[in-house]
Image 1 (tube, rainbow, N blue to C red):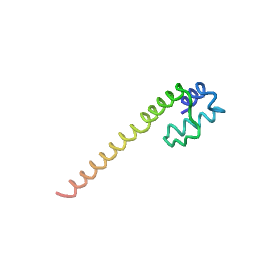
Image 2 (cartoon, rainbow, N blue to C red):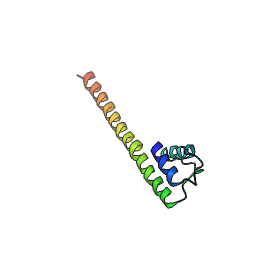
Image 3 (spheres, helix red, strand yellow):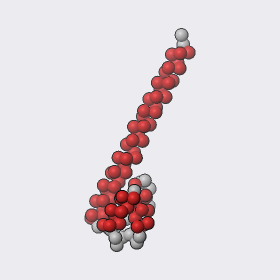
Length: 88
């Protein structure tokens, strides 16, 4: 988030009053809350926003799905093992 904030603040200096505003934008954008009160206005800023959003999805959403799938698989295996052990 801080890297995205630093990059967008460097490119979109006029759109963000302070670095804190850029950090706020990065937090809201990368967590997909998207209030829309602060946003980039230049083409370069919008491209950075798209790249940051894709990176946020790749780092958070995809691993969360993989971890959840493996967790459910482990629970199913445990349930099947218990069923096998209780039925002789």
